[in-house]
Amino acid sequence: MDPRVEKLLKLPNKQKAAILGLIVVLIGAGLFFGLIQPKLKQLKVLQGQLDGLHTQVTESRKIANNLPRFKAEYAQLNKELENALTELPNQKEIPTLLTSITSAGKGAGLDFLIFRPKPEEPKDFYSVVPVDISVSGSYASVGNFFVAVGNLPRIVNINNVAFTNPKNIGGKTVYTINCLATTFRFLDKKEIKDDKKGKK
Image 1: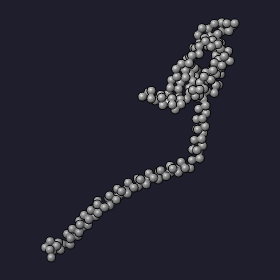
Image 2: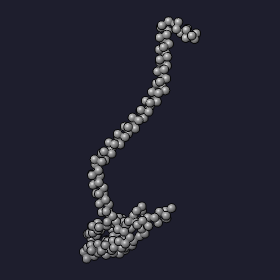
Image 3: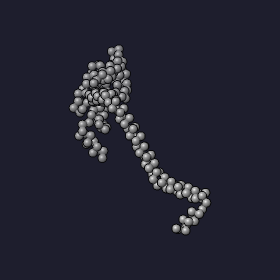
Image 4: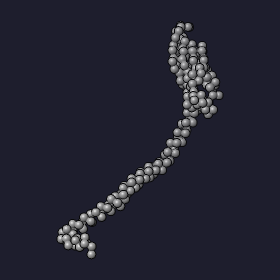
């Protein structure tokens, strides 16, 4: 028999128990750090992934349960977009719109002194169409003109309104009114491409 084994066998029982306990602890620590701890880490990662999937499933269920409402909202937004598109003319409709503005002014009793379209200002998908306007008429006529422009089916903003040259004609005070009328139009795809090339 190996002398080291004989020496161990001759040790008192307490020392044998202590050595055996140490061996068991070392084997247990080796098993824990070598096998169990990596598996625990893997389990933690998998648990996190599982929680994430549970959250995704819950949110997907919420969306699925609300799908009819989302479809209705989508249809409503499309309808609103179509309505908005009717308020922005295309290039062919701009002369007609400008004629409508002058007709509204004449209908309100104003005399046009200046009606000068300025260069368009292209933006992302639309273009700003400014027009310098100078008219002559009473305060009430100007108010009626602004109301008529506001009732046009297209968007027209009136800015920079200035009343000048008040004159008393036939018992009425007549002003010269200068303002900037601004309308907008959609750019077609070719114009958008050309504008992007120009910016580059």
